Length: 211
Image (cartoon, rainbow, N blue to C red; front, side, top):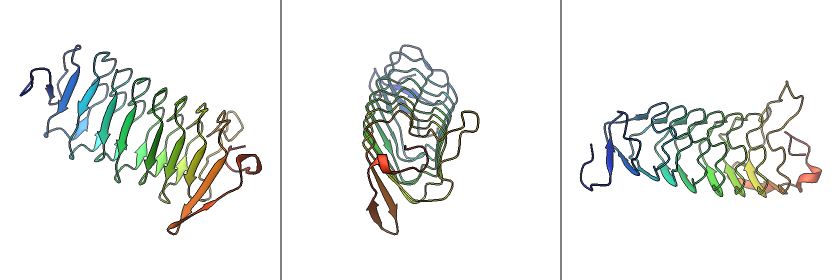
């Protein structure tokens, strides 16, 4: 049922009509459930609030969503925004700790973002985000799983902490492939202790599959 503006659907956790274009998450909702808006091809805008803590598995898979504010979210589950090709802007806050497997796989319109509180980036989380050019992590980061940014061909710069085991080895493929096919990646900045240190270009750097 819509409240206020006639074209805004107030979502309280039920199955929404397939033709909704604009959804406002009710204040009572703290978790956007698994598959809540999967394949909602008309959904372009979602208004969130500061009590949402989690986006569930495949919650917006294949939707037409253009932007979303996730500044209160702690966890984005597997494939939550997979194949959201129109997604241009995602606002991450200082609470987000985990991005699941293939969470934003195929989000071809995302250009840049800062993940200031992230601890774990799941396998294939940003595969084929072809417009992505810059990524900034903080020293809280502990792991970027295999294939996380594979095929992000426009990435030029990343900012990461220098930590042991930051890039787990892909045992099946016998390689480090977190940034495989990121052919324009030339600058890696180290972050930590309140400062950054610029490293040498990619062709001289051998850690974690950046070569």
